[in-house]
Length: 447
Image (cartoon, rainbow, N blue to C red; front, side, top):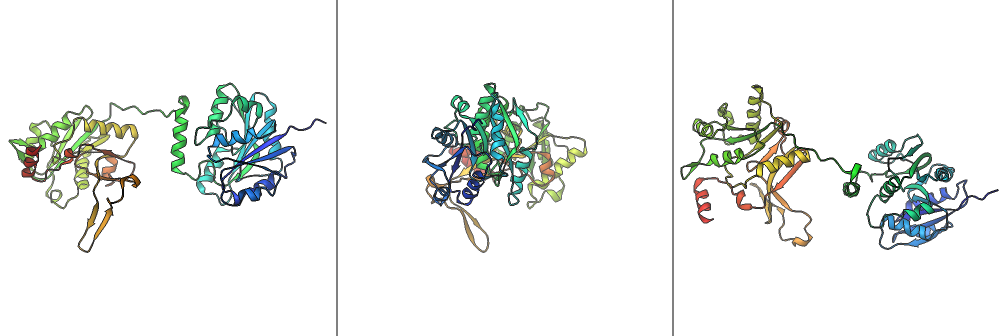
């Protein structure tokens, strides 16, 4: 009777004391008996290694852990013709797991096989969803799909010699390997009969940092892995609204609102400029500058206590009532006449290409920030912390300086919620707000 080939089972560990014993117990109960187990341990500080040594295993130490490097190290120490990778917290569902996992490798066209991963009852809903959707019940041969997962996988040592794992990347060494072997003309086999329980799933309970790293690696492959860049729709109808309460200010015979209107007119994307004002003189001045003033704001929306969104919502409703609909709204007030050329078009492009709800201009504040009311003063930002150890910066956003948003956000009074991009302005002088014309004159004279 021909002896079964020796299988080397590589298990990478880092503080897996809670799982390693049950994992090894299930491995040593498999009905395929010709195997060895190699633990590649990454400086565990708990009892992982001691618990593992209760079984017939070999321990290999790795100091600087990288996933592909750890697998390659374990394989170099192995004796088997077939290699199995198993996560320490993956528990074989039954005693036929190992036999079913390596069976597809008899086909020389199969570079690797991987098995099903099932959630536990206590797994998070996110992980349950991902595992149940990703690992189905049908066996399949992947000829173009390069998905491969080393939490529960197998391949021959000869294949590994041709295609060792990348030792320099921080995540998804298995997906990279799968991409390489598929491009080399091999296939990958998925066998749901080789199933394990895996409590945290393939997306680590939606860890955003890990997710960002994985996306970055996948997109570096190019081709089908590269996310398609949305193109700007030249048919987007873009409206600029200048909210102007009372009469525009005058400096050296020039109306302050003219600065903002002219800046908006320079845009290659903005199709229409509307001045929302309650003042007849401002209306006339704006129209002379070829801005559109289809109506005057009512008195109840012209009081000093009225919030900006109420004015914007009123203006948008009036326009839409006249069947004038827009895809994007740009907001700018007359109080910021020193904006840099091209600002509005850059912010519009950012909104479209990033699919943001709102893009708002802001500046970085380096000083300490306090919030004061009648009862107390609270320090919100402590600028005495050394800059080298700060893990955040303070942004001061201003809708009146420049803001690009969606009509739906205005209708819902929700401009500053949702997917927001904070467009940082390097030139803080351009952020100078004109509260009165004397301060503006003084500022210009000093420049």
